[in-house]
Length: 92
Image (cartoon, rainbow, N blue to C red; front, side, top):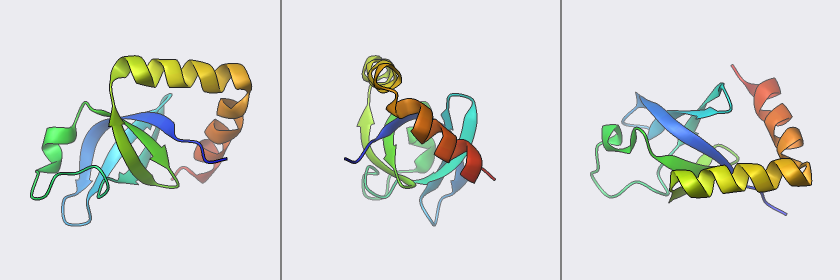
């Protein structure tokens, strides 16, 4: 099963490489937004958006309510703890 973890885009890291910084429960990670970015869209327009992240890529843009619900479901199922550990241990 593939899990998408919700994260909030908080800053732009590299416009050319389509990299942003997201926050996942207080942990910040670099994420590629090529899959969700509109053609020629400035990355700064994505700041504040919630995205579902899988293996370093934002796979879809979601709203905050969906993000919170997804976090609750993952937390209740125990999957969030494992995914969060992976994010923490691979954080820079």
